Length: 319
Image (cartoon, rainbow, N blue to C red; front, side):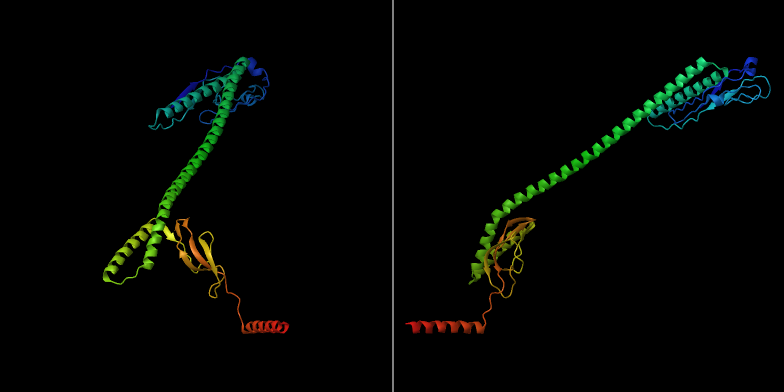
């Protein structure tokens, strides 16, 4: 899209030509449109005298080929962005940016004309308009900054909420598994007494006839199936004989001297203990080694016998 702006003919009067230019204070206006386009104008550089060593130079004006003023044309080209077939919001934004650019360029051209004509009133009016645009730009930048900070805060809040929800989900899963494990543990604890009865009966049965052997085999198959069911639930036995005594897993009911095992080693198991995962269903009852006992040598026995004989002789003499 290309727009054509025409500037009116510039007729310089003799008084303007021979009169030294009025010094202007430098004035700079910078603003950004929707496309981040910044403009900077300097009144001192834009307007100078056109007589005797003070040539007049206007930006965007074609140098005059003769002494007469000629009409110049300034072409303003704006590249039209490729509009893709998206939603209508992008089209509206592009139209608003184009309109702002056209208005800004029109103000700049009017400002140039006012500088050339030395129209202080018009210059002040245009400067006020440009300043209002600059103020609006600053306000919009502040608003964008505030919204960006708010977005960052909300993003952090969303991350915290997501983390809290994830922790909540994991905690609920752990509680659910603990609840299931506790329920299984209570059921298995009640069945351990039945398992003890099976094992006691197994140790007391003595097979003498073929019929008794068939009954024993049937009984053993039931016991084996019962043990397999407990294993499928995750129930395992506590290791005892030959292991170091662990008060968290073992219940010591007896201590005995042992030359084979060191002190604190389990010698014998009287009742099996069971674990369900990491939960102890029942500790095992065991006998623990107290280490090797005191050694009795021949010399010691002789000394004891001598002492006993001396005691007997002393009693006889006293009597």
